Length: 341
Image (cartoon, rainbow, N blue to C red; front, side, top):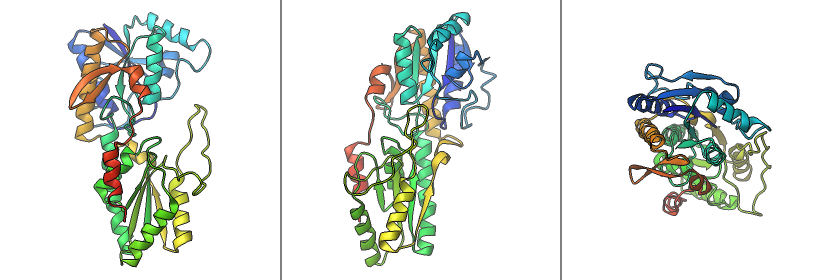
C-alpha cells in the first residue's frame, strides 16, 4: 500500500509523534509513505517527501510539524479537486492519512465522498472534535496554561492585582476549565456558559472585602457575555471565513479595572499553548492514533477517524465526528463554577 500523510489546519504539540507512528506502521506492514508539505497545498503544488523510519528519527519529542501546515483545501479554487485526484493518481496513492482539527477532518470526510479516500487523526488543542475524548495537543496545552496560572498567582499576590489570563478555546472551554481547575483560578469563563459581567465584578469585590486582594480570572478566547449584559467588539473574519478571536481578555481586564478601581493586568497565552515539547500523554496518544490509522487504511476503512474512547482506540465516522462538536461536560463546568466566590 502507498499512503500520503499530511498535517492540516492549526499546529499543536504531538503532530510529529503521529507522523512518526504512521511511518513506522506503514513500514512494518510493507507499505510506502509520502508526506505532503504544508498540507493540501503540498498536494496541489506537488511538494512532497518520502517519509521513512529514518526520516522520523528524533521526531517524538519535537513540537510543531516537520511537514508544515496550512488551511488550504482542494475546494479552495475551481479545478483544485481534479488536480488533487491527478496528483493521487500520478503517485499511485491508495489514500491519505489526514491529521487535523474539525475543519480539516470535515474536508477529509467530504473528499472521501468525492472519491479521494481519507482516514482522519484528530488534533486540536481546543479538544472540540466529536466522538473522541482527547485530541492530540490538548493535554500539552492544558499543562502550559495551568503552569502559567500557577505563575500568575505569585505575581498577583505580590502586587495585590487582578490578573486576567486568556487561553485558546474558540467554541469550547476545555483548556480554560481544566487549566483553571488545575491552577486554582478564582473565576473561569467559557463559551458554554455566557457570563454576566456584573457577577464577575461582584465576586472580585467580595474577595477584596474579605481581605483577598489577588484574583486570577481564566477566560477562553471564545467566551462571551450573556446577551444584553455587556457589548464587546465583533471579531474580524479571516479569508477562510473564521472569526479572529482574541481580545475578550483585554476588554474584560479594562472593564474590571474601570469598575472596581483595582489594578488589573492581562496575559494572553496565545500560540504558547500550541508550541513546544508535547507531554507524555500526547506522545502516547499520537502514537496510538497513528498506528491505528494505518491499520484502518489496510482494512479499507476509508472515511473513518481514529478516536479515544474509554482508553481504547476505536474507529468512528469522520462525518459524524465533525458534526458532533464536543463541548465541556456539565460536570466539569459545575466543578469550575463551584469555586466562584
